[in-house]
Image (cartoon, rainbow, N blue to C red; front, side):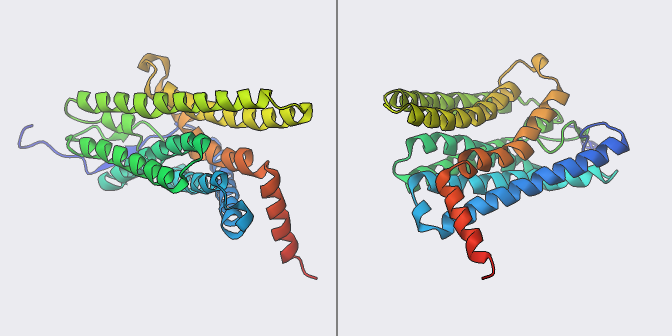
Length: 293
């Protein structure tokens, strides 16, 4: 680079290019989803911590999933909401890299937690491994990102500092970053999805052996709900990071990213926890205790 090259100290988050009225509507909708996801996951986390009957492997992992969902949404949604009410959509370089790091970290960790939930043995070791792998892999991406020069342009065509959108602004070859991202996707997404499908196939085989028709129906209902969440989570990620770029334009990427930031954190507690009889019973008892005599 030449000595007179100016360096970028902040980025501009382009977001959706919409009218002011539509942005106000999105502000209310996104705020509602964000609050509901925090409340739902907070309630699940509180119930699991307070009720000893829920101190089992399944709920242990559900508590971690709740923490991830709250953290995942909080890492980028507040800035997204602020951009909907402000014309100043800048974000400094360091907060942008931190946002990218957290987004990737929580995404990786959730993938791994979803996998180990279907192999619920040695809970603490599996949970620690999931969190450690998620943050170590994200740290690798952050280090590779920080080595790149950013000298303009500075407009991130996304709702937040998503890693692929930030890479497009680098003033150097990003092939190493791209290769690492692809390898990461193969390991975390494809590998994790394979392990999960193997586990669910074994679960489905066990369900087919249930003699009671009512028992099979109930088990299939629960299993299908879980598979829907898993399919949406992994399917969206594979489309975003592994499909040919021409097949998913930037506006589509923005919409898909909303699933991870807003919809998925709200769906997880509803599918995995609040439909569960034990959790509903614990919530009912907790509410009854708070009623005045």
